[in-house]
Image (cartoon, rainbow, N blue to C red):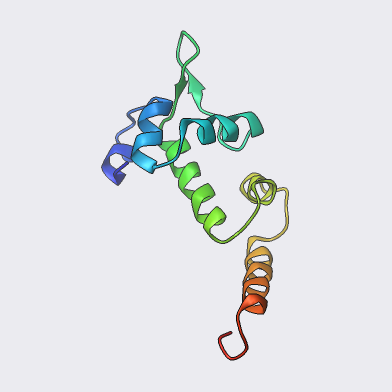
Length: 104
């Protein structure tokens, strides 16, 4: 999804969002079941992702890229978990400890 689409206020179906992000519909449904990404529903119950959900999904994907678990991401985004900077420092230390000597 382009920034213009995300800012336009247009909603997307789960299939459209999956195609534009490269995620699977199954992954988006999983995030919904976990309460991590909860889209609105249309009058027949289909998921509708608007700009706010797209922004939240981008945050989720960025945090996944840093190696945070879905539970940690949920806590960070909801403001109930550990400090984001502390989590990222921990992840960096863990990854550096996996590098061969002299590379970290």
